[in-house]
Image (cartoon, rainbow, N blue to C red):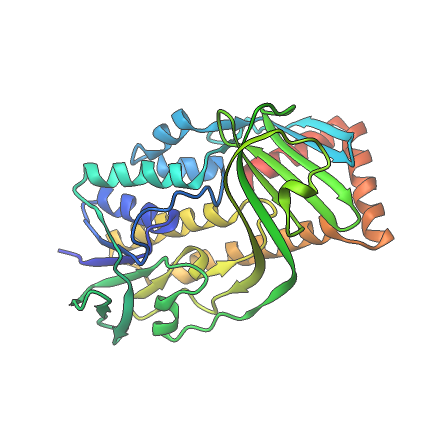
Length: 353
């Protein structure tokens, strides 16, 4: 029997676990947190992620719980600059879907429990002995040898450090913020709302179903930054963060493999972080099930590298303070507003990216 340890029970680790279980491999999953996260964190699920999760039945459960994100609204201050549908008839489902990460994780955990797999919370990886025949030493004092270790333990990955894999990149200086809130009403509950508040300052509102919304800003206070009124009835969580732009030099060292934020991280512009992690987890699980993990890093590394390049270009355009950067964005919005074919092309890119 193939023995697999998954370190980290976020969407990446759970996706890997669900796919392994579908292939008859029941992994051991640990997480240093003492209980599941109740935070929304990542909120956008792409049709590609849903296609990858469809064979296990997880996609159906997500679609039942999630909110379709059918439109994009762009404001300059309080003036509407662009309103456009966002869909692609070529995708697994035609729209992006909005669902709080804690709900996505809960759906995956239920799928795992149905296969007899649970998560051991409050247990952390402390040390790996010999990545080629990895023995994991855990914080509860136990140790065991595994055929494979999957490091899905985030940006500060212990797995990556123990495997001796470099994580080059840089940190951005500005402080961003998020708010996970209930709103009594919102004028655009059917899609993304992007507000260009001032030069270099943006805020985004994403519906998560019912009264729950995610607010994101390139400032330290997302709720204060919004240029449209927000009638907040309940704050689930607010917080600040700094953006790291990094990618592991390789995703594999012997029989230890990285996935998700342990392998790559970038700005939240474009909402690709969780979705890249899900794709990593599914791809790695399939390779473990087939006994062919040698090409995993070569398969997944280029896609994340391209996502980092694309999201960085988008971030520079959105938060650029120079007149030239603002003029480029103004010109792009004008072209989209007056060119239906360009809007359709943009919409397909957003949905299929």
